Image (tube, rainbow, N blue to C red; front, side):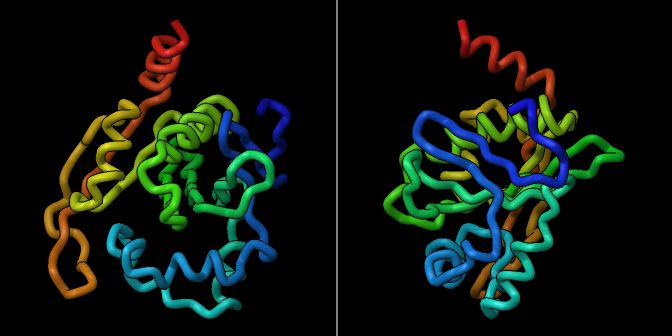
Length: 192
């Protein structure tokens, strides 16, 4: 996607999925339901996601498609929304933080994140121009930790007892990072 202009909606495609900028029309029972699902919330860094529809719309609309992106994940062929990425770029430092949530349980364990994050990394490194992409999953989020490692991210640190869990327990948070050169090296090896 080399013809993207900052501030305009993003659309990225993989073999099985589409990532696209979300709008206020995407905020509905399905989207809001994920943020109230205890199984989904147990793995997220933010446990307080009880927002009204108006607050959710304001949240979605704050992403500017310049330095912040809120990209829905849909099956190719106009399937229903199954999750989303939130991306926060820090242009002066050339870094971007990504968060992902697959809210639709039917897609858990189906390599959605590995497939979609690859095209997102291509976009962030090659189009947006960041030098580093990072994520900070909870250590207990085994699926997320697996995906970061499988994709070649380096665990740069453990923030001990960084977050408070739903029952008040203290949870470790990991810091995974990927440099542009590392991603390009990994992509070139996959192509051969």
